[in-house]
Length: 312
Image (cartoon, rainbow, N blue to C red):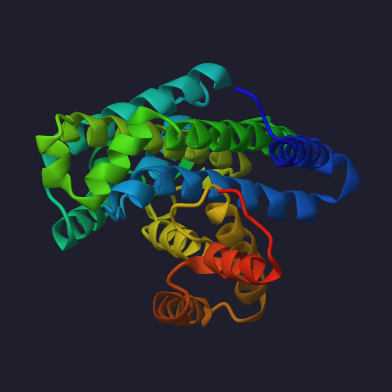
């Protein structure tokens, strides 16, 4: 496939940006590295969420369930298995759980799917709480991992780049086209010969696997976890708002939403810890009513006025 000059320039800028990001731990202090880790983690979560929910318009609030599964895989096996095997296990368990859930629930749509996925996240947290109290007699799990924050940063950077590349491939593939047809009219998609159930289930499972892997890597920063920390449903709402702010359906949309909200979260959690959820709710209302196409849509209109073309 031949590339035009603009595409070549964009590719060069992307590679240069990745190279700069790879050098960040050598250029900034530990606090900023921690901030970049949060940005990369939420970038993967938001890109994975957008890859499924964007084209299909199935709004999932189950992100925290798969994210928490990854965290608990590390918490349970960090002393008995090498880290690479734990990461593979976290990916497989998340994929299997999403496959099982998808087969039984992706026949739902609209508000029913939203309610079910939110209930699923809460059910997972409650089941894990019940298990910890009744079987281990303790809610706490300790993670004894000797992984430096720089290594966590680089692992998340590799995962973020891989997720971005896979999302780009999906958007330009026949599978991505089939997902968009499902989002436009699922009945038409079925009559066109598209196996809508399996397409939805496979992509849902694949994106959930990325969420579980993200949780496993992020958990290496912590020494203590419990079900309320690992399966915090607030993560699901953060990812949803970040995706809406950035612009659903655009490749760069998640990143445009993640960066400002992570910075805002960092500021509010330190300065106004009891008002953070209120501000986030206000942001959600503003985005829905006044920015339905997100930051990406605003930039498109701005560039159009300037006579510039944007690349999805």
